[in-house]
Image (tube, rainbow, N blue to C red; front, top):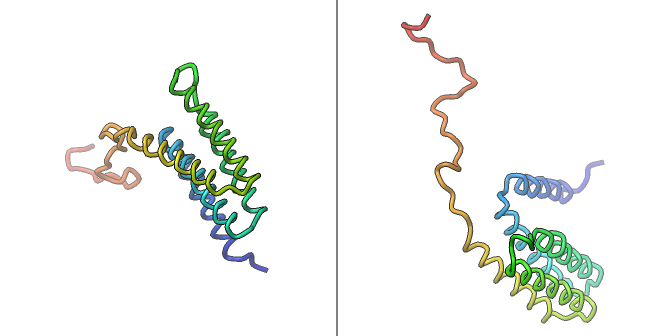
Amino acid sequence: MFSSSSNGANAYTKIGVETGVIAASPHKLIVMLFEGAIVAINNAQVQMQSGDIAAKGKSISKAISIIDNGLRASLDKRVGGEIALNLDALYEYMTRQLLLANLNNSEDALIEVTKLLRDLKSAWDAIAPQATTADAPPVMLHDPLQPRPTHVFEA
């Protein structure tokens, strides 16, 4: 009659992630892509160790999708110049290593790609834009939905 509590938790997590994506700055979205790829590869490594081939393949495919359809697709090679071209080549290398890791059950390849992603994420974190007071929402001194108190001098 009722679905399992894990389904409810998964739905809640999905909503939380979607809300985080909607509210995130472009910089934060890239950080979230790095984090998602790292988590997917870590899951693949655990699944590889436990012999769960189907789940390992699914996790590696997810990491590849994040790298190709998220990180790599977000590169603007016209504006980014040599840095964007180098990142494109690095993302292509990571994808190839993940494919080989899946084919050959290579934990070393998973570890290598995870290290590369962590290094890039660290560099990305280091250039995070600093929040300024101009970016902060205005501070409300009163509740705009509450009726205003009237003063003696108002007509």
